[in-house]
Length: 256
Ligand SMILES: [Ca+2]
Ligand SMILES: [Ca+2]
Image (cartoon, rainbow, N blue to C red; front, side, top):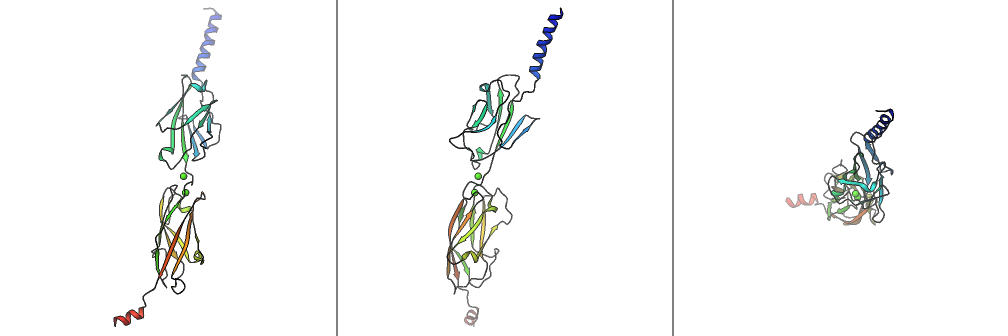
């Protein structure tokens, strides 16, 4: 074999070898949505807030780099949840809005595969963050308090039921609006006292912070509002009735 042929074979072998063994990265992530790359299992993890995608304007999630032809890519979902997307100029767009309150829209996992055998696939895990976007709700029935009794959150009979599909109940801000300064007469305590972010329902005890007197008012009527961290508010009308306390002297006299 002459030296020319040997040189040609060596060049061809080098080109072939380098092409096979080059570590091709299929995607380079261009937009900042809290993206992490795990080199060991070639997985990109993306955190994206719910509802940040306009229904009318697709949101770019990442740009795919070093693929020979992005039109030849295959997007292979682990579970087909009907995720709507499109790839334009090697940029991957979500063309749908995400709603964390729908269990099917909390996370997605897919592989990006090239039809070219020397382009290694990558995996993408898209996790949707919960945002406090849903309004809370309140339920209350008429409450009865005896006059001249000191109530606390332990013996108050007045309970509101509060729910919020987002959770985050511990951050709800309760306000009273009334015409007789009821905000100075009543206070709120959430039960349980320590509550986790994911809990969606709790009870709130409404208790007077001073003894009520039927001679001053036989009833109170005021608005209770709960506002979550997203600014969503719900209001209910509360009616508080003051009961006369049995006169101890009268009842003793009656028994005699
Ligand atoms: Ca939410
Ligand atoms: Ca909420």
